Amino acid sequence: MLSVRGGRRVLVTVAVTVALAATASGATYAAFSLAATTDSALREHAEAQAARGRAAAAPRARVTAASPTAGRTAVGGPSPSAPEPSAAAPVALVSKKPSHHVRARTTPRPGPPLLQRGDDGVQVRELQARLRQIAWFSGDVTDHYGEHTVAAVRGFQAKRQVAVTGEVDRRTLDLLQAMTHQPTADELANRAPDPAGGAPLDARCRTGRALCIDKTTSSLRWVVEGHVRKSLDVRFGSAYTPTREGLFHVYWKDRDHVSHEYGSAMPLSMFFSRGQAVHYSSDFAARGYAGASHGCVNVRDYAALAWLFDQVATGDRVVIYRS
Image (cartoon, rainbow, N blue to C red; front, side):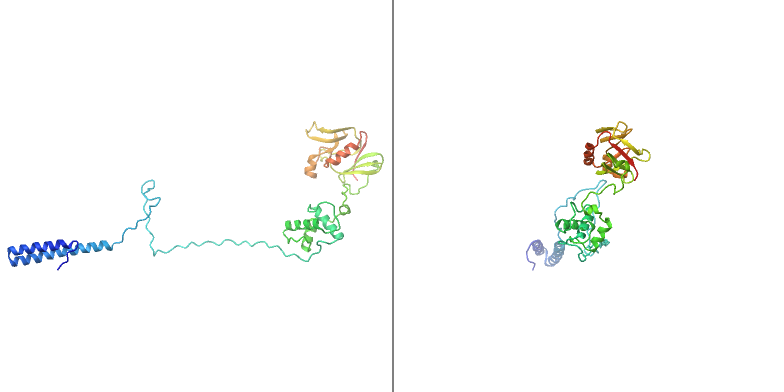
């Protein structure tokens, strides 16, 4: 007997109807009709039941949040949707070239100290003089290795990328000696070096008052009665505009002179020969001997020349020669 549940009620109703009709029309016909009708109803029921089973077995569509690009179309028509990757699809591995390994520069280990904090003597003085030549040490040199020397050595070592200890080992000393010259007696005695280097004075400079100018040593010495009172570095004219040589006299002084011919400033000018003068030159101060004058005697130490300008009088001798 079929149980009445859901769609099965239709089958029972059909069977009852067929049975009643069989009673009215005859037993044989009724039995046949009941069997045929029941059979058809059972097939329909089985097909419906199978359809519901397939529907229940089908995977439900997963509901996900809409993508920001969902529903958009590219210019020129809809873009084809990309197929979903298969779970079994192989994963592509991208190989990356190894970067070149840069070895860090290592600082060499320091050697045994040759000079260090607390040392005293002429070797310390020479060390300080060499450091002063390359602007790592300032002030007067002494025989004592103190904090000032330690700081100077440390700065030199850091710049040269050697072990920074503040102590002088063989490597530090070799580097320093390669970059400097043997200190002179003036450097060790904290005396300003003589630009003339001890060259002899011209005989015309040994009496009276004279600006004694030596082209060989590029120096100017202010001499009073044979005694040198001031020495200065100087620069001369080029081969095309040479500075004249001989005995001259100061005929005019102009503290704030400007050249009418070249339009350049010529402070502290002391004229001695047809427009040629001893004067301060900012170009000489900036470029040194890389340049030349137009025939004048250039001085680059403004303060020293200002002092000299006040000492020299009109009529004093100017001697320009080669020693």
